[in-house]
Structures are given as C-alpha cells and as structure tokens.
Length: 349
Ligand SMILES: NC(=O)c1ccc[n+]([C@@H]2O[C@H](COP(=O)([O-])OP(=O)(O)OC[C@H]3O[C@@H](n4cnc5c(N)ncnc54)[C@H](OP(=O)(O)O)[C@@H]3O)[C@@H](O)[C@H]2O)c1
Image (cartoon, rainbow, N blue to C red; front, side, top):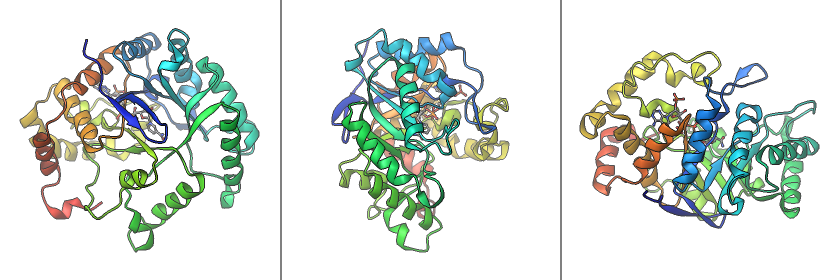
C-alpha cells in the first residue's frame, strides 16, 4: 500500500503526514446553546473503521475538539490511541466553546476541567497541539490574559506541547490599516495573533478560496514570517466539493450545521455547480476525480501545510487518501486556478 507523503509542520517542529484525519464529522450531531454544531447522524462503528483505515494508511495527524459530538469524536479517537504507539502520532484538540457551569469557557479552572476530560477521552496524558477554538474572550477580552497564562502553564506542566488558534478565511495583512470591508476582523486577528503568539494556526483553504496578489501577505505568508505552522482545514468544502451533483445535494437534517449555512442553500449550490462544471468536465466527476482536484489543489497551494480531511467512514477517507497519492501537476494546478479565477476582477476577496 502506498505511504502518504509527509510535511514538516513549523511550530510543532515535527514531520506529520501531508493529510491528517479531521475528526469533526465523526462526532455526529451536537448542539451548543441550542445551535447545531455537528453533522448528520454518524454510524460510530463506520467512523471508527475510518480512523483505523487512516492509521493503517500512515496518517499521523489527528484533529479533534471537546465539542465535536460533545466528546464522541475524542472518545472514538481514544479507542485508536489506546491501540497504537501514541508517540508515533500527533494529536490536536481544542477548548473555548463549552462553559459548563462556569461563567465563561475561558475561565482558567474551566479550561483545566475541559483539558482533563479531553485527555481522559483520548486516553493520553498530553496533546501535541491545543487550539483556542473560539475567539470570544469575554467582554473587553477580559479572559485573554488568563488564557495566555494558562496555556503557558499547561505547556510547562507537559500537558500540551504547542498552542494553536484559528485564522480567518479571508485575510491580507494590509487590510487592517485600510478601508477594506474586512479591516476590523483582520485587525482583530492580528491583535490576537500577536498576543497569543501561537505555534500553529488553522486556515480554511480550498477551490473556493480567493486569490491574493503576490504583494499581499496572506495567512500562509504571515505564518511563515513568524515561524508558525499552518494546518489547512475544509479542503473538501465540508463535502460541497466532493459531491458529483453539487447543484442538488440531499437535504441535511436540522442537526447538521450545514443546514444553516448559506453556502449549502440551493441557489448557492447552483452557482457552485456552474463555476465547477468546466473543471469537472475536464478532470472528471467521479468521487475519486473530485477528491483529487479538491485535495490536490490545497496540497499544491502550500507545500509546508498538512491538510485535514473530514470523513464519516472508511470508504470516504480511503478515497481522499488515495487522491493524495496522485498529486496535481503544476500545469493542472495552474489550469484549475485559471478556470476558477478567469478575470483579474475575480481575484479580489
Ligand atoms: N480549528 C477549527 O476551528 C476547525 C474548523 C473546522 C474544521 N476543523 C478541522 O478540519 C477538519 C476538516 O474540515 P471539515 O470536516 O469541516 O470539512 P471537509 O474535510 O472539507 O469535509 C468533510 C466532509 O466531506 C465529505 N466527504 C469526505 N470524503 C468524501 C468522499 N470520499 N466522498 C464524498 N464526500 C466526502 C463528508 O460529507 P458528508 O458528511 O456529507 O458525507 C465529510 O463530512 C475537521 O474535521 C476538523 O478536524 C477545524
């Protein structure tokens, strides 16, 4: 069986498989404060078979969170970690959304309680990356100094190895000091980035991401300048980019967060179908073809960033991992990018 390519992830200071297992979907349905934060029903045996398959194929990066299925995702991953050599893989989890009985999810005592539960669920005594999942640090960011201090202590105690945070989906550093519509969110991210000083950030990057000018500092360039690693997420567009009939996806149940996402509404799906149709006509419309295009595009964009893929069973992750073994050529990448951004006007976020 082909082995997965590996990438050195700065910040973590270690090599990981170029494709990592994103374990949000396998958490299944969940709500937080009444809002759906999960996915349609997932068969836990099938999900676990997906995890086993990922391990057998050489995946060494596993990404979960305390709120993914309110522990189900961590517990499934824990079943795998109890079987295998823990030191041969890198495991990330997250904190910041679940407050329990605390006033805020980022109160230090609550963070420690969540970490204890996470470690217990996973059957491990440390995390390789601990992400600050939410950027809500309370009124006037009152919990932010305590969060930074708590993460430093957790690292000193050996419970976590590195600190992570999320990056915005669209970002160019200079927008912060301009009248760009994203100026405020860009300035906010930069403030948090320089305060938290993460080792690793996660960024959405896929076929639908904007192009930036060579002179723009996007999140990848910002991270490289600071020696921070980037982990790419949502390369499959949360399923959008892998369904053969992107104009007519089956409806999701109300428990699936995608049921509330405008990108999954019929009109948006029809626009997407039209936008992708030349690429699909040229490169194929089977799930294997679509996985090669979607994953290959993200892998090609940033050669130093591993890409997480979500899955709900072994078949799905088999298809995406197989696609990773057949990368896009530079010519194919250029052709796809030109088809997605046919005019210079489309190149602006
Ligand atoms: N740090 C953060 O804030 C953050 C945020 C988002 C995600 N993440 C991480 O990034 C990971 C990846 O993102 P994601 O899971 O949201 O999205 P994704 O990887 O873009 O998409 C996952 C979805 O793609 C579909 N899929 C996968 N393989 C398929 C195949 N072979 N054929 C057809 N459909 C297929 C499935 O959709 P169906 O369910 O429709 O079958 C699956 O649920 C997450 O699992 C999570 O670990 C982190």
